[in-house]
Structure formats: structure tokens, C-alpha cells
Length: 246
Image 1: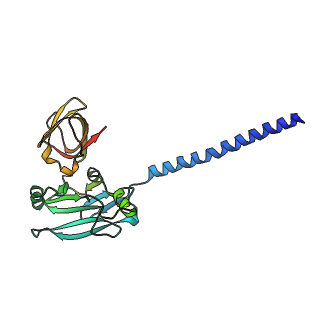
Image 2 (image 1 turned 120 degrees about the horizontal axis):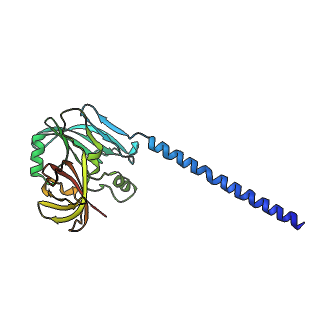
Image 3 (image 1 turned 180 degrees about the horizontal axis):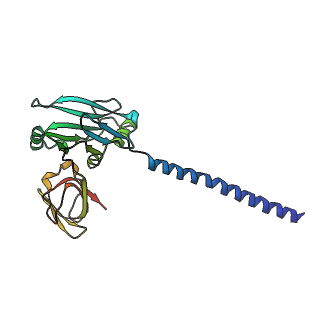
């Protein structure tokens, strides 16, 4: 009798292990399939043929939480311009992102007279494409404010998602270089690049809001820029963002 009991227990153990193994295989196959589907998914692209630009919508932006709204506006000096506000939940006063098409002469005046002037995305003819982002959530602490903050983009992320359509545009690709900050004065940012070059960038061409806080001599930085660096000549490079990295 004991012999049969032992055989029964062995059979029961084998059956249990086999069932557990079968159960664990199914989720693995399901996850792999989901990963392939995500990889094949095309980016959500907002395209405005009339205004000649496109913008890759972030994956975190659900369609029910935003809407692009095109409108005409007037500057203080009377200059008219067109803008596209990516409105959050119907609140036109607090967009997640505003893309503006401004006459070049007016944009140049703004850059000289306002520290909080919009950041440039490129030009086409006599028009400058520029953008602004909210400084902080306009809502009281809570679920809505948390959602708003989670959807607001970083300054350096906007140019990477933006493309001017058609010829005669000056929107250039964003490049980046990493190194160690050697010196930071009022007008110059000096780094020792990872490739050994010592590079000096004109600091006044960068928007203050595009520079991370806590930049100190000796810290590692990543500088995103438009244009070109020829050897150690950075005269044709325009800083988009200075990021502190580990």
C-alpha cells in the first residue's frame, strides 16, 4: 500500500510542475507580441499644410486631453501673426504648447527687448517659427494639475519633434556634444569635450530657460545645438539647450 502511495505522490508532483510550467509560458508569448506591435506603431503626427509645418505628438498625449487650435493674434505694436495652440482639455488660456509664425523683423525686436521671448524653431522666407511652453501648471494641486504637468514637454524636446515643410527653410537638425564644464562666465560657456577638444560657446545665444540649474565647474554637460562645429570653431553653432548629466 505504501508503494502505491509513493507512486501516487510522485505522479501528483510531476503533474503539478507540468501545469505550472504551462501557465508561465503564455504571458511571455503575449508580452513579446505586444512589444512587436508597439515597435511597429507609427508616430502620431500633426501636419498643417497651410502653415507648412508638422509636429510629432508625444505618446503621453491622449486625444481626449488636447486639441490643436489655429488662430490669428496681434502683437503690442500691431503686427499680426498666426499661432497654433495645443489646448489642454478645452482650456484655451493655458495651452500645453504654442507654435507661432512671426514676421522676422518682429521676432528680432522681441529677442532684443524681452528676456522671455519665444524660442526659435527655424525660418521660412520672412517668417520665424517659434514656440513657448508653460512655466508651471495653472491648476490647483490635484489630479488635473498632475496630468497637465506630465504632458508639458521639455524645452529641448520641442525642436526634435518639429519640422518645417517645403523649401526655403532654415530649420536645421539638432546635434549634441558632451563634455566637462571648464568655465562659465556671463557670456561664455567653456567645455572639455569627450573627444579632447576645448570648445567655447557664446552663452548669450542660449535662452536662459534652456539651461539646467546647478551647472558648476567640473560637472558633466550635454549641449544641444543647431549648426556646425568646425574643429574648435563654434561660431556657426547656436545653443538650444545645456543639460547637466551624470
